[in-house]
Amino acid sequence: MRRVTGLSAVRRAVDGFCATNLRAGNPVYRHPLSQVALFSTSNNNSSARSHWFSYDRISNRSSRAAAHAVAGTMLFSVATTALVEEVHAKEPVQAKFRPNDVVLYQYEACPFCNKVKAFLDYYDIAYKVIEVNPISKKEIKWSDYKKVPILMVDGEHMVDSSDIINKLAQRINLTAPAADSSSGDDEEKKWRGWVDNHLVHILSPNIYRSTSEAIESFDYITSHGNFSFTERLVAKYAGATAMYFVSKRLKKKYNITDERAALYEAAETWVDALNGREFLGGVKPNLADLAVYGVLRPIRYLKSGRDMVEHTRIGDWYSRMEDAVGTSSRIQAQPE
Image (cartoon, rainbow, N blue to C red; front, side, top):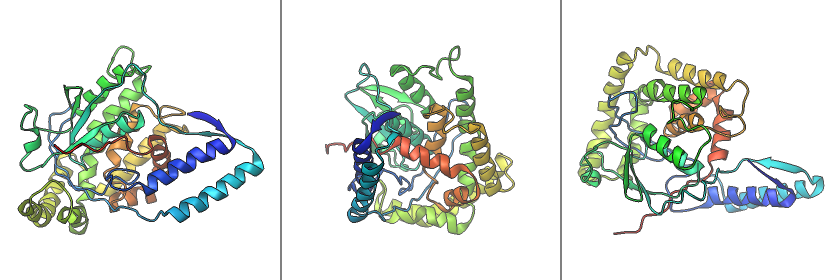
């Protein structure tokens, strides 16, 4: 949190609003679900592989005229009331951790990749993204580890989303890094484990609950993604069907009888864990907040995510997390 006053507070808020809604040419911002991806990945507590496709609707409702209309109203309000406001802001990393080159190998809709990106975005660590072709995986041929995410930090090879976050958290000197079992915050660790061992397993059965929802997740593939023309056709017409049946097997494996009810229950369980706090971390997000937010980003604007927000209390927390994490810290990679 940063405390700012008067016109300065509003000006910063408006600048952020305009930048978020008007920035062009970058595929991952406030509504990051405009992608489809197939992935195999694992977490710290399980070696089981999961397969994921996802689709996002990009919201283009904001315009420059609307942004400045809002700005004028806000400025007038502050000028007449002279209120002191407290606004959420990204957490800057300590000066001692300023990596020169951070590269994330990912599938855009992979929840574990989005966990890592939520951390990087919140702590304002600039990173480049290399989208991995989920069929050929040619972009990670050099790596013995054939899953994503893979993070390269000044040449150092990091794998597994939770382990990546633990290492980065130690480097920026978080007060209670979850990587340290002797001093880590027990509540934070508990809920990070819940994300990896429970929440993520509910997502695929919801995304591919019906043929129409599965097809929704694959519409994107005709014009986006790191695929050849043939691969696009295979993904579009065979992928939705395959993942529909995979989701049924996942339901059985994880004893899910009603996928929507399980999703709603998980959302309510998380809100209950907040116990009236803005975030699990209190006045600002901790690693558990970032983990839940990260894995939910790939479904937020799909039908399953819209239903979740409509039928549970998680929407307010999610909106606060969007504000706290802010715009992406992703930078464009230079063409080779």
